[in-house]
Every structure is written in C-alpha cells, then in structure tokens.
Image 1 (tube, rainbow, N blue to C red):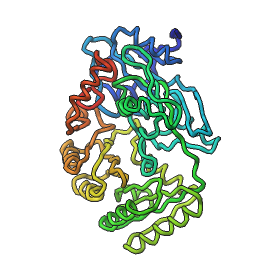
Image 2 (image 1 turned 120 degrees about the vertical axis):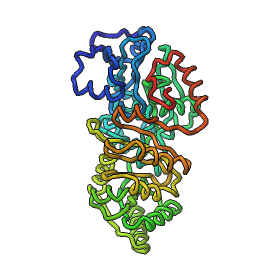
Image 3 (image 1 turned 45 degrees about the vertical axis):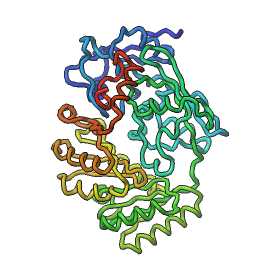
Image 4 (image 1 turned 120 degrees about the horizontal axis):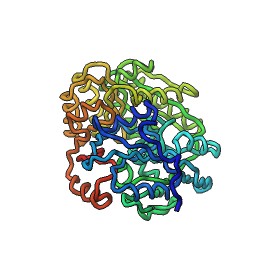
Length: 432
C-alpha cells in the first residue's frame, strides 16, 4: 500500500484564488470545498476514496474542463466537497514505438505526450480543447476530440486500454496495451465521456500514428448554397482529408481566410498526394464560384491553432460554449439559421463527416435562443449541450437537453458503479 503524504493534501484556504475560481465554475453557489488531494500513485488515490467516508468527490486533472457539464450541488450530508486531482499521476508508463502504442498516467498533459511521441516521429491523433493544460484523463473523461476526427474518429477509437479506481476504492482495468486486444471494450466505452461519474481514470493506453510528411490546408468561402455543395462533394469523394470543417462567416472573417461561410480542409500525407489533393480542391472551388485560400508551412499550422482557440473559450471568459450534433446534410442550414436567430458576435464550427461541432455565444444570449437552436438540432437527429456557461444559465435550463430513451439505463449504470452517488454528482445527463 502507498500511504498518502502530507504534501498530497492542500486545504481550500491555501489554494490560490485563481485556481479556486477554476473549480468554482463547476459548483453551485455556496458549495463548500474542504480541500484538494493530489495523490502520487493510483494506490494512494484508491486509499483516499476508501477512507473519505462516502464524502462527495469532484475528480479532475488540471481543471481545464471543470466548467463543462452540469454543476455540482452542496452534498446532502452537509459535509464539504473533496477535490481529487490526478495531476501528479503524470508518468510515461510505456511507449512501444514499433507497436504504435503509448501508455501514460491520467495526469500527464496532452502537450507533454505529443512531445514524447514526436521524438519517435509519431503523434496522438486527438486535438482537444486547451491542449497545453488538458490532461489525458480529462480528455478521456469528457470524450474531447476535435477536427482530426474527420480521419481518425473519436477518443473511443484511440483507446486500447485504461485503468481506473472505482467508487468503492478498488483498482480496476479494461483492455490492454496491444492493438488487437478487445477485452473490456464496453467498459472503456462507458468510462469515455462519463465526466468522472463512474470512476476515476488513472492510466490510459492509446494507439498512435506516424507524423505526416506534409500538411496543407485549402479554405473555400462564399455563399452558403455553394459551401453546402462543396461539403457534400468533399465528403463523398476519395479525398483523404485529416480535417474538414464548416466555419461560420464570423470565423472566416476574423481569421482573414475569406468572406462568407467557409469550408476548411486539411490534407496530411506524403507531399505529392497533398499537393494533388489541394489542386483538386482549388479546382472545385473555382468551378462552383467559391473563393480559395491555400495555406502551407507555418500558415497551415497557425490557422488550425487560431481556429481551435476561437472556438474554445478561455477559462476566465464569460461566454457560452455549446457542443452540438446534427445530420451532416443539415449543418450548413443550421449555421444559416443561427445567423437569423442570434445577435452577433457568435461563431460556429461543424465537422462535415460527423455533424458534431461547437458554437460560441455571448454570455448575454437569451436562453430562448439556445433552446430554439437545440430544437433544430433535435429535429435533425442531433443535440445541443452546454459546455461552458454562466452558472445562472446552467441553473435556468437543462445543460444536456437529452431527448433519447437511454436515461433509465444510464441511471442503472450509475447506481451499479457508484451506489452512493459520490463521484461528480449532477455533472452528467439527467443530473447523474
């Protein structure tokens, strides 16, 4: 057994005010926090859970996504909330270069993992929000990926195995470290995107990919009808784009990459293939009357960094960010309708293959506007969930707006994994 050390616990009164504000974005007003525990081993983390006498626990990594999801209420027992951070579980466990896998502890920062992999000419094909601060455990717990899902799919598709601590303090694991291992796959799917409500992730194994030789981006911009045609053509073509995103006119203008609605397509492969595909995209744009911008080298890198920053609100910013889903064929129409419903400034980004995306609104946007947009998404087999928003707004409307029929099963799973509802209560769908 690995006992806790005195340095593992930080009383709330000693936590810097900037960090306190970060945590408070996940809490209802007047919710009391006793302190932050940052164990250095999975065994010590398990000890904290076992010995905390059913105290309500808020798991986190570096805290970059604490503002997402539902807000935690004051525990019914009137005891203070305990924050349990995995930030000090930050070791590289294994990098099997030849097998294209990497195993790291949950508290390792995404940027540090990429740095390690880059030395071997490899990378993790995920582009999460706040990549410099985000930890691997937090990325898995929130299923946070980005534009690279066009080629590489979701966080779940990257996962090969994980270890976690159950709500009763027992260590558990699923999957393994080899690409063909599928044991425990359902358990990995359950933990991914569960917002820490079913267990606390301590270690993750991912598949990784070789770094591409070349990367270029073509941006098409113009009338919405022509952009819809271009998106359909790209989606049904043999082009092997790494990313392909619809961007609202406000994003296109702000980033200086055109005028009107935009379609940004990133191509990553060997140089001759990238150049040939870029030329085909430019010809497509010209044929249907769209303006084109062709970005290479550092300009290509900078565009995707700026796009991610624009669509991801900083922790301190009082804005509303939403995750949405809609039938891909209706994505352009949705962005057009939001222009009619919303008061500027707002911005949006939707991945053309999945129909998933992000919207960012001013903090003063009326709840009725958000509910109208949610209704449009749901009518088209989609959803709208609040990620970051003022606490008052999250108290006024349902954060998740779930309209499916799986809620009873979700609640049964919560009861089985966490019968005393200790872990991240109220953060997930249906206030689970």
